[in-house]
Image (cartoon, rainbow, N blue to C red; front, side, top):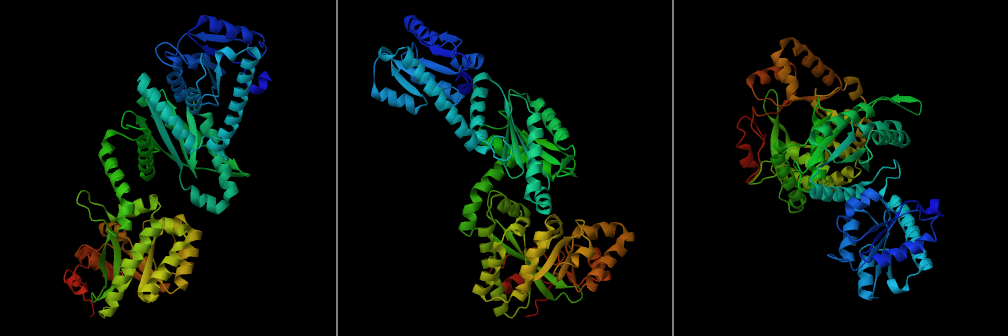
Length: 573
């Protein structure tokens, strides 16, 4: 029974009455094979540190102690040790039902009246408490550990983080969160299948576990995200631990007979250097992770004071964004796309804005927040409704121009976009052939199979399809032949680079010629100067877009008012 119940550890008796302690030791002496040692304390002062030192299997706690009652001591114990780790049996000189209920509600396993305690009664109470603790431990494992990797799950990590911060405050220590993410895991998982992806996650988890200290708490937060709670650390130690993890995890692994190389990014946040709570610590580690992922050279980034102002701004924006979408507080602006030769209006690109008095919010930042917060469906319902309302007004005003809307990366995994577009087009009686949906080249290369499937669905409904920001990624014209494309938008940086280096003008000419051979219209993006305008015309671009003709603007008092801001553009009314 001793091995089964893990009771080789000592029993702790906390009682200020020496005669009572002697009696309990005498009772337990009869079961010495199960309880080889007993530790005595006269009070509950500094009990947390003593518990760490002695690691008892069970605590017998007197309710009436000098200086503080047993309830206070019990609460102190529970802040450090959950019931499945250290069961507590409370003894009192008088039976009081209200006290008994209160103690049990605060984590005691049993409540006994001293006058009724004998050897068999005490032994039975301890045995029952240990069995209950074992059962709780098993249930806790199911509830608090990740089934795939065996690491802590998010809920247990948050629980341990709360305890760690309590210890930091009490003992003037530091703790940290390392937030780890596998780069480009989704496309790998999609290409090789879930079983393959699960094997990669298990191997990564094992490497993380092997490179953690005994005091660390590694966890899987979900999908390909992991976190490690570091306790009793100094600021400079965290970077060394992060580098150690990078070196270990990025070693090539063999999965199902195939050598697989992976890369990771890590975000670091330290309490109390920049964070004031566990929630802040997790959010700051995530922000540092995003910075590491965006960096081309850094494997890990530590959240520091210089990020605090920007991070606070982001927290406010993320707090307010759901209500802004629900209340219709966002706004649309439009930018003309014109014929290269005549400047006749051909299309209007739709861009979203969030007007605020306190912060400027850029379009890309807004879209990234929407994706990160899982607000894409609600946002795009609003976007399609507002955009197609304006499209209807354009048609009613005899202005012939297609609308161009962007498809964000995460929407390639959503089945709702086809439904949302189709329903909104029907509701506003907009011809789908007057709408062009844009997907970036980087998204196309990141999710090739899903992108092809989604674009085919949309194209069959009559919508036009464009590849945006062409020239920023690594796609090939041969691959583009597999897609149902109508338009290729050449990125502005592609033009800038080639204007600086005239020898590369032939590259743009070749891309334009190949696009035309595939029946695609070619749009030059970001045209701001006469030199860029001339180059776009020379290489055969069909359409132009950029600040040369005017910055994106709201419709204002109506489309006639809108076009007054673009004197170079002929709206073909």
